[in-house]
Image 1: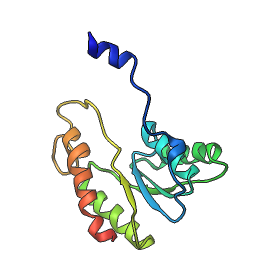
Image 2: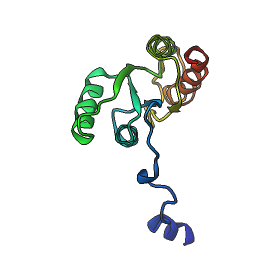
Image 3: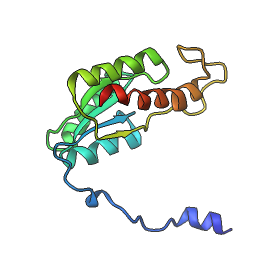
Length: 149
């Protein structure tokens, strides 16, 4: 009973978007920034003057999100970074591309993911799609940060 109540009436958040400090000079990557929580994260960061890289596998969906973000943030736009977390070669390529453009990464939001794909779907590297994307892809991208710093 208590669990149902707490989920129906969650406590007030202790931290809000308004409390995010000015992020001028901060370079941030948001994986899955083209939809949902990732897109809203990009919006909040852009509104606080961060330089945001929107990492996603679909350029067309990323472009649509970038246009939406421009409208929501008075013309501020993230930079598209092609990243397919289900393909470790793509993950390495994205890290190398980022490194060629930036000298430093301040924050990495590992947000992207897939949920309940068909059980027989595999990544380009042969792993279960959900595990490969949500765990291995993000782990490898995070490990590639040594290429970024």
